Length: 73
Image 1: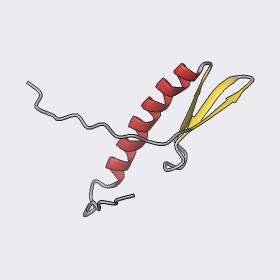
Image 2: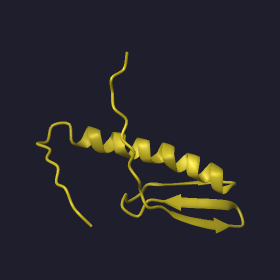
Image 3: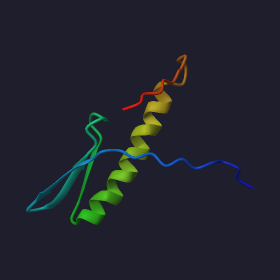
Image 4: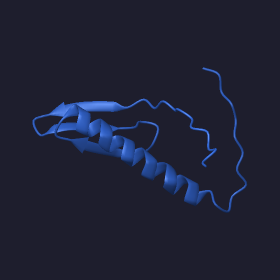
């Protein structure tokens, strides 16, 4: 049984349409982008790219003292 609580996090994305389809990026995550022939495909692809990006961030923080801050906007 998995007792892991799921958290929903929202990210702002930049979606651009071109003759080839759609490209999408996350302005807050440098280098995190994807694309797709349709808007739906591009959005599915960016979800995978975000998960991979966050996995790499976790790996980079592995030996660091990590703290969190809260920000009200």
